[in-house]
Amino acid sequence: MNEPILAIRGLTKQFGEIRALDDLDLDLRAGEVFGLLGPNGAGKTTLISILSGTVRDFGGSVRFQGKDLFRDRELRAEMGIVPQDMAFFEELGARENLYFWGGLYKLSGQELRRRTDYLLETVELNDRAKEPVKNFSGGMKRRLNLAIGLIHQPRLLLLDEPTVGIDVQAKVKILDIIRRAAADHTAVVFTTHQLAEVESLCDRVAIMDKGRILAQGTLDELTRIVGEREIIRISGEFSAFEISQVLGNLPASDLFAIEDHNLTLALDSTAQIPGILETLFQGNVAVSDLKIQSPNLETVFLKLTGRSLRD
Image 1 (tube, helix red, strand yellow):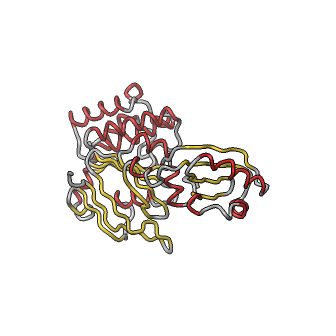
Image 2 (tube, helix red, strand yellow):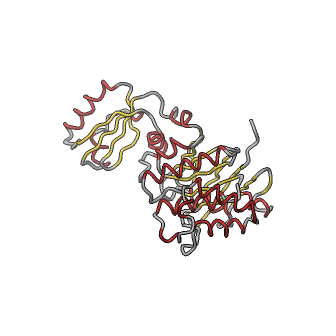
Image 3 (cartoon, one colour):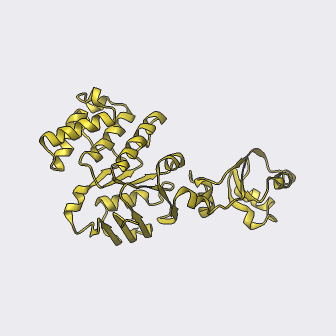
């Protein structure tokens, strides 16, 4: 297998008493889209901030293309960064913004024009390239933000929740642009808390919580953590404490997660469901919904953390 283009070892970051990253290891290869999946506060943005150079004073090492990322300044020019915040000038047009940022990466003349034309077409902004960006919709601004990160054809692209706050159609376009970048051999680190985005886009995924990578691998590799059992989701007007008392005799291996209003079980057979419901009804637990689902990333997260990704 090819050597990783990005190799992170033992990355640790402390903010006061909070350990935002806890001994994190990660490898990334050219052309790979690597998803960092986790709730707010999991450490995803801290990792992106360290890699982009905006957060310092950390432990561990980061090697990019075989070199220490923080000792070789020239490596920065081969990285593209798309933060959650918009990185453009609202009063300028899309073309002017791309010219400006391309110039910072020392692009000029025909090369800069060619690259700008290509990206304006790719992100579907060529017909409004001269219009002030302040007039753009949220989805258009997100697409321009992504184009700026790609202007210099980076070897590594860092994306911090690039689809936040936009509609489904705009998300689909942005995910397609990311796929094109990976097809051009750009390695992509993609942070999100949206399961559907990870499942449709990423070659490999790391599930993060409280600064740690709990598991990483392909979708198939991760879902094997759950096993072949039936996943049952029960919802209702109950507290986690209440349902814990009622289900006190249930085998621990059957319980995935107990939360307020939600209970997740892993059962050998759906034939067990009537007995469990009878137990809940006898305990006066108000059940409003029951779903049977196949193992997926959400159930993997529940298995590893005992709580839903949305928390």
